[in-house]
Structures are given as C-alpha cells and as structure tokens.
Amino acid sequence: MHFRPLPGITVACAILFAFLIGLGVWQLQRLQWKLTLIDQVNRNLVAAPLPLDRILALGSDAQYHRVALAGRFDNAKESYVYGTDADGAPVYHVVVPFRTDDGRALLIDRGIVPRALLDPVTRPRGILAGETHVVGVWRESQGAGAFTPPPDLAHRIWYSRDVASIARADGIALVAPVLIEAGATPNSGGWPKGGQTVVTFRNEHLQYAITWFLMAAGLLAVYIAYHVSIGRLSFRRPAARD
Image 1 (cartoon, rainbow, N blue to C red):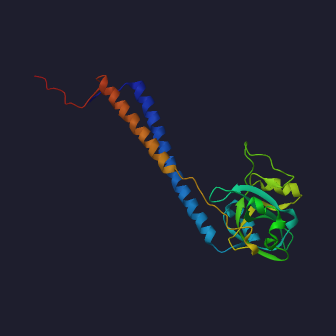
Image 2: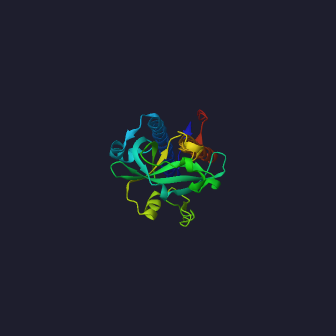
Image 3: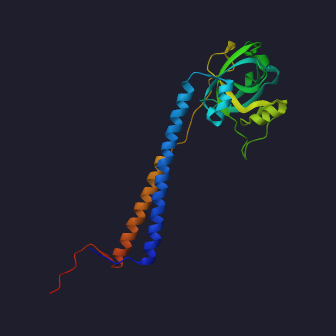
C-alpha cells in the first residue's frame, strides 16, 4: 500500500472524525441514562405510596412516586386544565385544592370530564366532601409555553399544567409546586375519571448514535476515496524495480 496523506485535510478530517465518534459515544451514554430513568419511573409507579413528608424529602427524585394523603378537598375552587383523551377527544382535567389534616395545601388532578360535565352541578355524586384519603402520582408542574393560550379565568380553564398560576389565582400557598394525579379508583357517578397518568419518554438516542457513527464512517470513506483519486493512496503493491 502506498499512502501520502495531505497534511491539512488529514488534520481537519481527524478532528471532525473524533468529534463525530464522540457524539455517537455520548448518545450511547444518554441511552443508558434514559433506560435507567424509565426503569426507575416504572418501579416508582408500582411501589407502595409514601407519606407526604417522605415525598417532600426526596426533592426532585419524587417525580412519579405515589403519595398517600389524608385531608379535605376545597371543592368550591375547582379549576380545569384542557387536554385530550386517548382517542383525541377534548376533555378537562378537574384540579382541586386539597388541604391535609396538618394544614398543608396541594393541588390534585382528580381526573377528566367531558365539556358537558365541566360544571360540578352536573356530577354531584363525584364531589368528595369531608375527610378523604387520596393516593396519587407526584408530578412536577409544567409552565405555559410560548404558544400556550392564556387561561380563561372567568371559567377557571387553563391550557397547561401551570400549578403556580392555578394556585395564585386562588391565593393558595402550596407546600410544593406539583400536581398530584389521582389513581384509577372509580368515583361515585363515574366522574371525574382518574388514573390519567401518562408516562412517555422520547428515547431516540440509539438512532442518533447510529447516525453519528455512520457520518464518521462516511467521512472516512470520502477521505480515503479522495486520496485514491489524486493518486496519494494506492492499495496496489508497487512494481518491483529491475
């Protein structure tokens, strides 16, 4: 084999090749992190519910843990977060302040109702009054995005899970800026329908890693082909001299 590399192109290609390989390796590391995260979330969702103090002590690690609460709903302050059900139909998540027996406040997503049942008067059997025990999934708040419509304060409708905004509208001081999603235990009368926790994690790190590695391989192929085309790389054995 005969090889006389062009110095400038070789250095530039070597740097770019190392960069592409590094991105591929980084995506593989991200893949392992994402798989670990998914496994942890799945274990949290099936683990026994924790008391509020234990959940609060976990900080950001409390996400997707189940929590057990005892207290009372403030049903006069129902709010609604617009969404869609599994079939894509518009629904509203019924968000109600909950005051624990020791006086701490949280917001609970009791589940979904269709537009026709937005008014609590239309579903009186589903209103929980008095001492209540709730088990739900601890979810972090999601603020409004750049294109999220502003809330309809007159009808208490929000278009994002903006817990801080909902609490502020009612003058509620929350113990944590989270929304607790009630479990699937049926409510009297059937509404709201709980158990609406959806766990979806975008996991395309393997595809990204393959893309970066293929780009690195393509760069190497072009580098070799170019040197062959200008006669600086030959895989033939040089002819023997007499």
